[in-house]
Amino acid sequence: MIVIDKNRILLLCVFLPLSILLCGCLTNLDSEADKEPVEYVICKDSNCPGQLQDLLEEKKKTAGTFIYKNSMYMYLVVCYGSKPYSGYSIRVEECSRSEDTLYLRTQLLGPELGEKVVETETFPCIVIRCEKMDVLCKMDS
Image 1 (cartoon, rainbow, N blue to C red):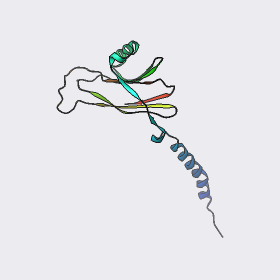
Image 2: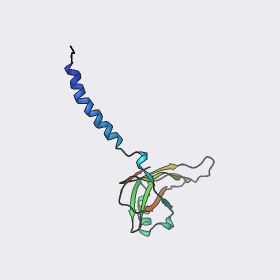
Image 3: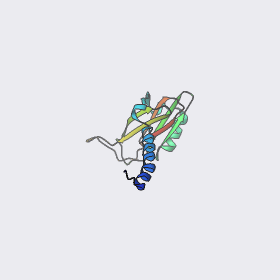
Image 4: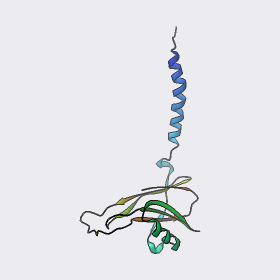
């Protein structure tokens, strides 16, 4: 004769469906396999539309991100706010997209060892131009 513990049955009825549900949710998160690289250009001030240059002057003093679009391109902007000296650079770690999301990840790099720096307030920021897309943008810095 088999003895069945009611507590074990209750636990199986609650936790088994919950664990299956959680596993399904985790596999649907954005994985690297679902992403494809996006072609982009790093824009200098002279390559930016006038309205974007004005916005940049206004927003570069505080850390944050924003997007500017015109009829042809989308400009992804990452600002790192005020820094006390010169020599900073920004590296693009990732610019890719999934079906409905564009991902941009950047990293602020300090001056290289031995590089001459000047104590002056600077505002490191980067402007990435890519093809205009109708997607959600996720930017991490």
